Image 1 (cartoon, rainbow, N blue to C red):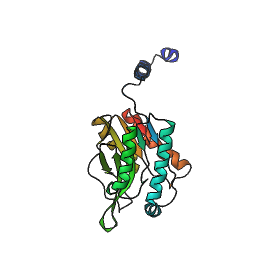
Image 2 (tube, rainbow, N blue to C red; image 1 turned 90 degrees about the vertical axis):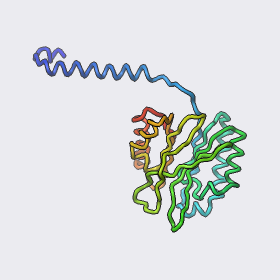
Image 3 (cartoon, rainbow, N blue to C red; image 1 turned 45 degrees about the horizontal axis):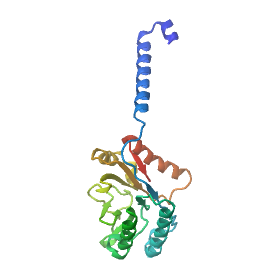
Length: 232
């Protein structure tokens, strides 16, 4: 500033002062709003690390389901306060909502522990088409979300038509899948409709090293843009 005063360049000096005021205001705003408010949700992210292709996972869906059930019970033993269980995208590659035997087991755990499951699955359609589906299951309800913007290069995936209507503790969840993490408008739509936090499921088996890191940055960007927490 002394240099600018010496040069007597009033326009540059004025710009510098305004910039300092703006940055100071941003700092104060951030400091005053950093306190966490609202009701908390305790979640467990269950990762089975099933490193086989989709067809093999479909053929072994029941065995994979058992693995995730076992990991879920282990998580609940370690922390009985868990309220939300998240399984990854495509964790159970079958039409899960058509398997009442598996749904009954999820409901039994949900009822005894008062928790909500969010599970990545697949909805198989006629002529080889499918939908990238996420289901929410609790003791009292079940609902599904078909990705409205699936990976564009996979022409066999049919997009859904509506955003997810997922809730926990009567609070809206913003549900994102895979490619949707790259699209800022979907997260913004959820935020504008009152979503309290985001949940993202993404199958990144084809990424390695730096690719995994870069993919995870997109979720952080969506969270920062909308000032929301993100479970991924």
